[in-house]
Image (cartoon, rainbow, N blue to C red; front, side, top):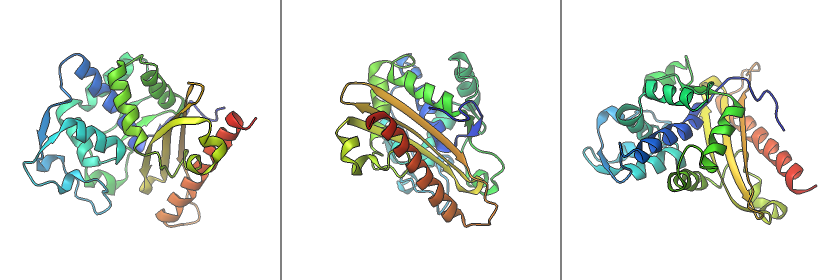
Length: 253
């Protein structure tokens, strides 16, 4: 099922999935090594009270494994960890060229790094894609079209760390009819409250071995002057309902 699947939306943090995929492709070419370490520097850090990552709390100069930074970027959506990849490994131009080369014509980074100024100004999202293309990118990772099995599994493992999701997968742990038919699931969410953007990109694997990908991008028009917290809560609930409807179609026929 699909609705407005080819319309371009702001990605918020779901752009981090193709960003990590692009980095892993460089690891496959032996340009980078996932076992390397990076020393924490001020240039990576976003000093925002709302920033929920942990990398910014590490002491300056701490050597942090890149593998851990990748895990933080996907599993916790740590924006300071993401800046390591944007500034040291995969710059904006290279990311956009890679997306074009792989046939993902609508997916692009709009910024060269994440910053407090960027999030406070709310003039643009960090990236853009379509729901269809975001799903295709994840499906191609799962099908090992863009990554080898080892690196594809790393991304899925990081996404599975957020299995207690509040969006598309929020009903899975609480519905026995779903849990009985799903062996594994995970997601990467994205939020940009000042732009009223709430997204989710999810996968789940059935007991029959089929892996299904779902993506949803919302940009609720806040015409009633609601607080950003209220808008976020409403959109989370709506994504949960969309996920539940899709699961019922698939599993409760």
